[in-house]
Image (cartoon, rainbow, N blue to C red; front, side, top):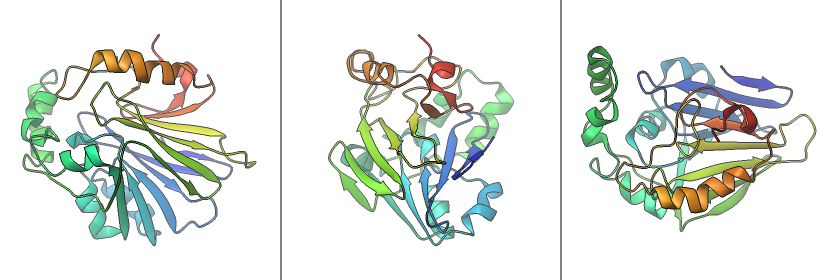
Length: 232
């Protein structure tokens, strides 16, 4: 379900089997520009992509189901991929971005779903960043201040992307949480680079401090307010 309300245009697409989400946030002042978060291959997104002259691409973390559309996207849209140095190193290696172990990510799925996912996922998949930063950064995107905040736990390079504004007609606070907060599931910290203590000490308190009406765009499942999605 897309989020199109007043001046906000956020298009949402899902990866089969794992339901990982890609978000296309249209610039509120220049509709030819967009933020694209966690790219995946989605032919249904082509009509939106074809309207863009440039996209700034951001990642919530390095896992293959959240980066699988980067190379496909580059062929369709002039784009710049910005991510942390930690993330940039991992997306270059299919063992570190977990593409080589894609079957492990769907062990709890049916045999049919497992087969489908291994057909979708390139087990040798890699991609490359255009620009990097240390652990956190911020920049303006139209009327929004965009902050990329280090939120370890699910992985050591997990980050939440926070958009805030006081402009009328726009949602005042939107947070793209990746797998640091998902809809309907507990946060997984057992994968390589995951750390439950870091999640409890750093990321959970940061999420707790968000206002209940903050619009959450999670890494899996449908969006909603923090109050609706947060599992206490």
